[in-house]
Image 1 (cartoon, one colour):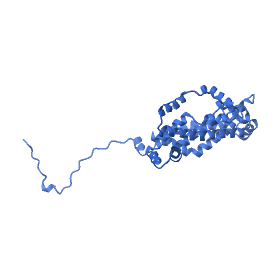
Image 2 (cartoon, one colour; image 1 turned 30 degrees about the vertical axis):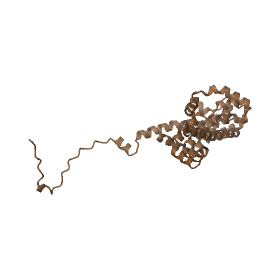
Image 3 (cartoon, helix red, strand yellow; image 1 turned 45 degrees about the horizontal axis):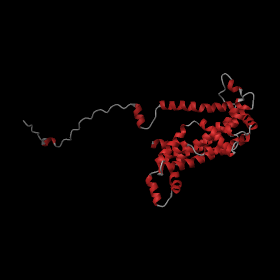
Image 4 (tube, helix red, strand yellow; image 1 turned 120 degrees about the horizontal axis):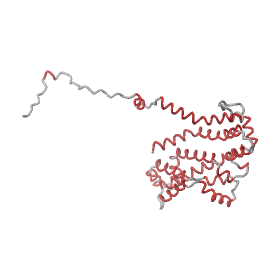
Length: 309
């Protein structure tokens, strides 16, 4: 038997419709509520604080030793408060080695390598990312594969080439081999491939722009954050390099700052840690200044790559 649905009576038509009661919302944990609002808890601050402390303490203690005498290292308990002898220790550094000349050598080598790596790696990366030529993928794999070869294996043939060119004890022996690296080519290739759409290049070519014009006017400005990161990495690597400059340089006036610090250690029978640390502090200051000046570009470039990935 079929059931008949009765219509509501006229007397009930004036009454407000009954709203069914809603189920109670589940309880929200305090932590998830904070995460939704973009806030972080105390544990995050604790981890960041501990990490920052252990990251900065070696720099602080380096300055503590540089501003004390050599006994501050062997003292029990060791000194943890800066002393008053930093200027005296720094003066001994400049008396022992031509430190200004060594700083200038490191700056010349590092800045030229940074500029060269950015331009040449960007050119190669643009070719691998946006140009179509036979064997492109094979050559890219070959370039990336060179990163697996240890640096020590290339020292002997590289030194023989430098010797044949007559560049031993010359800054060109440091600059020319470092002008382009496989990592730089791969880094810039990825940056151009992610930042530059093909339609923009096609539009430029329709307007009559050639490949070099497209690279200089369109590709290079679009990868400025990635280029800044690569330039800083190249500068830091060249500034801190010790192995190759120690092999090809043999004159104190041609030393870079890292080799000069090693020369500073070998001049005394007893190691003066205060003087050595003063030299290391002076060698670290240019890197800190560059990071302060380019910090926003560097962080922006790294974050841009992280978001796109």
